[in-house]
View 1 (cartoon, rainbow, N blue to C red):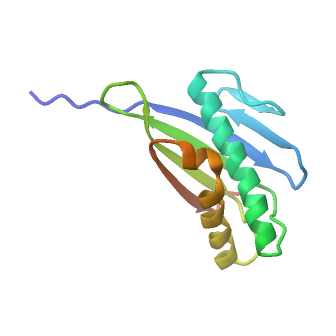
View 2 (cartoon, rainbow, N blue to C red; view 1 turned 30 degrees about the vertical axis):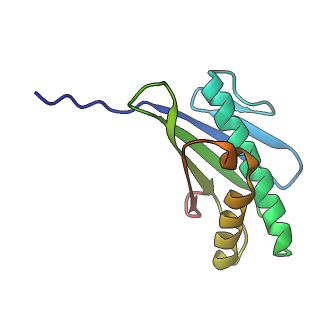
Length: 135
């Protein structure tokens, strides 16, 4: 008999950039607020990562002399199947059109991932993608 285990998914946690210095958050259990959602320590980690990506996108956009449009960041984590308890993989999706030029948007996304201190500190796979259609 083969036992299959479906990995647990943490999140999603969302961070919203509206064009100001203010970042809002939500989760599947909470409405949008100015504070990261209450929950588990993993939720707080995912919220920190979402915030870091928002700030990193803003910084990266400055390097291309553009201002990003409003967008949101969706972050989910996948629990490792082996011990000790840990997150094996995190997926980050930038939702919305960052800037009008798609090629520059892609460069901003890649640079933001490269400069995000939180993602660079984590000891798991961190994947970043963009979803301009559902923004």
